[in-house]
View (cartoon, rainbow, N blue to C red):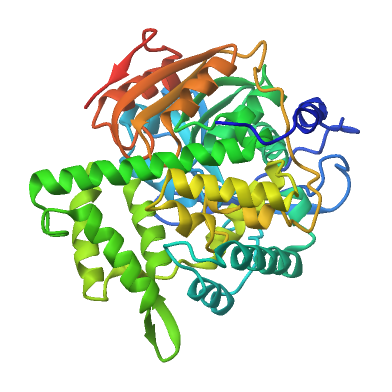
Length: 482
């Protein structure tokens, strides 16, 4: 595709240096207390601004499950589910109770909610009433005024973030999160970090590897981000996600035809487009409050595609329900997760403020993904590739953005996992990350859905466990297809 960002702007971004820190921050002391079912919780106070380590603090929340076999314990395994905006408590409890036995036996499973997320002083932007009202103005099909409406909504969302979270907004970028993680590594007593990052958690791991290339033992990154395009060429990065979602929906339609699923009567693509148009014209409204429209339907279908083939029957049934103007695929998204998701990405990424470029980029993305693109491009700042209208009007300057470099020279081997059918973090981004990291090593899963570990029945898990526990990498060019 043509790159609308000028060479001068791109060069300036790549030459931007990360500010040097004045002095090491004090390592937090953790006091673990019981928080149900054998899990422990703690809080840690870390610098709000790592350039001023003795200044104001922010409190982070942690969850831990101690290793089941202390005699064979390696250390702590930090895990992150991504988002950005995902809390870690649920993932720690999943790994601690249902994860691979070798990991449960040999590691304390640890997660900390990144700053501004979940239990760690969560960011806020619009409230539910405001957010629902914004979605009520959105459509799945572009209108003549879609761009102007989207710009107004993006400005209102960004202003709400500044109103509700002004103090925190400059400090939620991933550079700060990576520095937090290195302090917490020291807090748990580990000489080297062990880390498993999923989805956006891969970007946290990538930034960590570049800030602290000799401070980790193993980093497994599943469902990776291309760090260069994510941070410095955001429209290019977003286009890949627009196209990946559209392609995944197309494969769902193909399955629906082959299996004669409950939606679409043999032509699910046409039925989906018709349903979008009907809900745009006649949204589901109860007592004057939006319950669902074409844009919310599209958003929810996009979200469900991350579940892979196992989610396809439920999507088909949900679409059939939506034809009856009911069901979960119509639901209006909630604002809390999307406050963090948008705010973190606006802090991390270098969007041009050019209105003309914004218009051209959104039109191009919508044309490349005609069924799913307009609802994300022109609707409400929500998830990942729906942020441009807010980020181009962001009211604060980030003090915690990491612009690169991303090659992590001197780092130990890093395992990168990519899924060929991933609608959320496109496979080509995992390939790009493995090539960018000097010690990157790619494992490919051939399948549908988001990430490899949670879509593969056994193969990816076996390779990830062998790497995390023993440092054993899969053969070059290895792939899983289970």
